[in-house]
Image 1: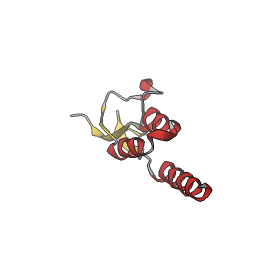
Image 2 (image 1 turned 180 degrees about the horizontal axis):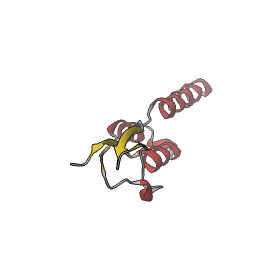
Image 3 (image 1 turned 60 degrees about the horizontal axis):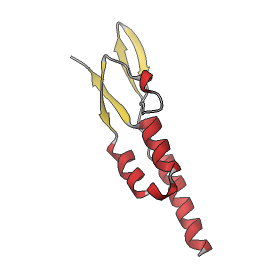
Image 4 (image 1 turned 135 degrees about the horizontal axis):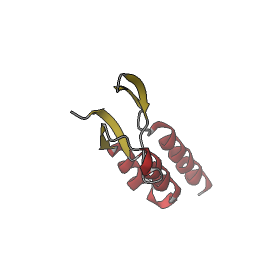
Length: 88
C-alpha cells in the first residue's frame, strides 16, 4: 500500500512540474512585454489586448488528480488561461 502511495505522489508531483502554461512575449504599444498565464487566483493579471485560451492540459490533469484537492486548485487557480496572440 505504501508503494502505491509513493508512486501516486511521484506521479502527481511530476504532473505539477510538467503541466504549465507558457508565458509569451508580445509587442504592446511598441514595448516588448511578457504576458503570463493567469487563473482565478489573479483575475486582475489579464491583459485586455491579448487573446487567451483555456489550458486544456491543466484541466485534464486537474480532473485526473481531483482526489488530491491541492492539484486542481493550484493548476486552475494559477494557470487556467494561456496567452495566445494579440487581439486584432
